[in-house]
Length: 116
Image 1 (spheres, rainbow, N blue to C red):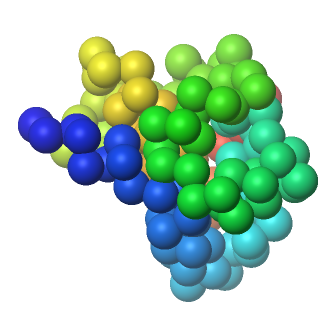
Image 2 (image 1 turned 30 degrees about the vertical axis):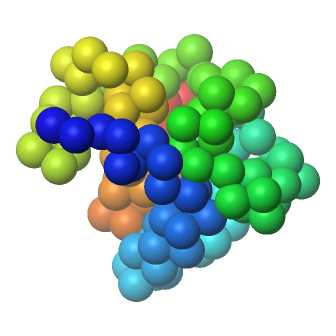
């Protein structure tokens, strides 16, 4: 699998897609932001800085203040792969985020999504 393309994709290009996916299912931008904040440790200001600077996924996760310690509790299939079995740590983090947005869109409660 050629992962270089996703690594260099600007997070700002994908962020609106996450929001659209959630909103189509009755969820909100604020809820998308909440799962991003939970996973990465970003806050509103630092996330906006990443978006404005057009940081790619590699930079986005490299500069993340803190990957949540419970991120390893994110399990299941996303894009045909078990997220807990992905060996490349960057791809795994990207898929963690995909999985969280997916769970949000599927109507899971925030407590379950945030592994409380």
